[in-house]
Image (cartoon, rainbow, N blue to C red):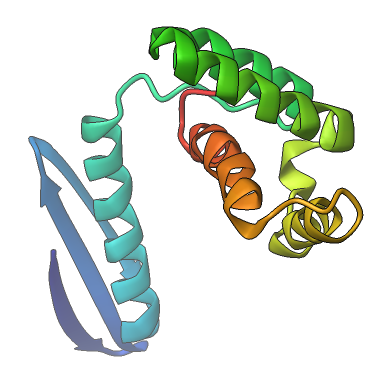
Length: 148
């Protein structure tokens, strides 16, 4: 990115030239800040387009049920038989408590409430509550990624 200051009859202007990956763009702005912001944004867009050329559009809404189904298909089925049984048992709880909730609405506070329920109402030990969280955590990581 190259920013050049021009002073003329009509005042000062700033010209930005961006050359990235065989692409050339330029624009003129009244302030240097606008020129810098435009140049940075354009460079980021060009780099992102090269790194993620076929980045799919993510649907705006998935439920926890859909997330768990995808997680089981992609990840849990590749674990050992015993691990699969443990994870499926734990995921059954998450499906019943959060199943119809939109994934975008899952917050740390909501997860803390579920953990509190497991500890206080069901009377599970902290180790057991951690096991439930360990079973669900990779599903949340899957939801945060670009491939859900």
